[in-house]
Image 1 (cartoon, helix red, strand yellow):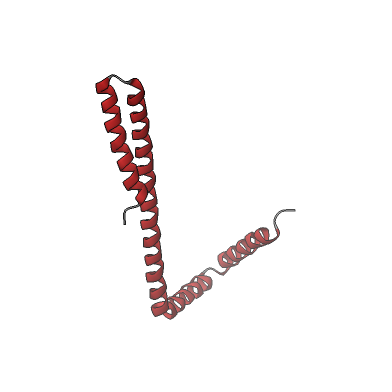
Image 2 (cartoon, rainbow, N blue to C red):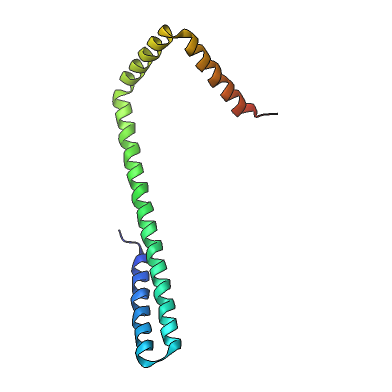
Length: 118
């Protein structure tokens, strides 16, 4: 879907080009300057519309990706949880001291986040 700012901006840009060229042809510096100004306004409005279109497309894609991810987790969530639990259990069993240090660091970080530095 094309944003209306793009359409209006393109029309203004074209109108400004015509007015600027007509001012150049007629020798009117005022019409030429006004035309260049309208052209710049139209170009800016077109770019603004393009940015809105791009953001809209990104938002649509993010929504689609989030829905797909949610569906995958719903379908395989138990498998991920089991696999993750086994992996953590294995690593903690092999390196209990490192796991204790990591748990302490995470706890300290959470305490700082919740209570802040006083």
